[in-house]
Image (cartoon, rainbow, N blue to C red; front, side, top):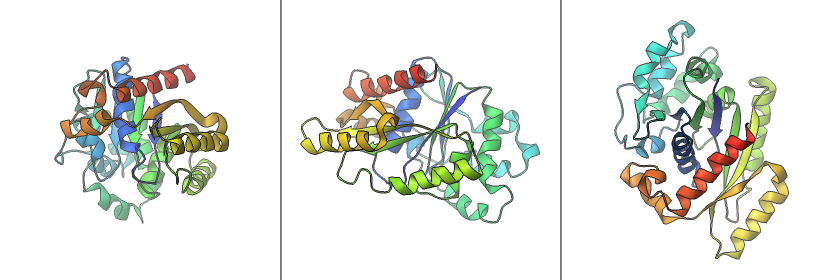
Amino acid sequence: MSKVIAICNQKGGVGKTTTAVNLAASFAALEKRTLLIDMDPQGNASQGFGYNESQDTDIHEVLNLAENPDNVTYENIKPAILDTKLDYLKIITSGPDLAVMEIELVNAMSREHRLERVLKILEQAFEYIIIDAPPSLNLLTINVLTAADSVLIPVQCEYYALQGMTELFKTIREVQKNLNSTLKIEGALLTMFDTRLSLCKQVAEEVRENLSDTVFQTVIPRNIKLGEAPSHGKPVILYDVKSQGSIAYMKLAEEILNKNK
């Protein structure tokens, strides 16, 4: 059985995709069979592994397939599961067509359970499944939360860090109540931390005070290598393994592994 972790925050620019890409890569580096699913129509997680163009079979095609539960077999999903430069990591990419799915799902039967059907087939093949959710609270995000075991919430160390979190937690509670009673908070992750700025330290203290034990001990620093790596189609561990960003995400992966022993 796999552990399914959704990386979710409807506020843009908080390090959501950076976390999805680099956490998945870190799990793979630790030789955990890992799958990254890009559920963001912008396809940034896909681009982070060098998939800059739409693929013939991507998550949009897989979700369309899942309209009929009888069609959801490993053989039918397999063409969408692509290789990466890490032996233990596979990816299902996204593209602009996924934006249409929001409209397609509006009147669909069991519309919240498309991704869940897919993951029930894939969970035997992987130890960890990481999902990069869209940066908004829409039907695609509801699909992600319905299918996930837990939610990891990146929180940028800036003044409005907690703004919008109320809405996200409200959505999570609604999903727990109506669609996925076992959904848990994996943790809040402080990102873009700059030790030179007193504001970052104040925000970190405020987040820890408000979210207490749900905040990870690992903090992701503001790091130029993390910003450069996607333009080279690589996670930071392959771009500069000795960078502070690479070290931080490896620590995060180890913290999650230890937490879930």
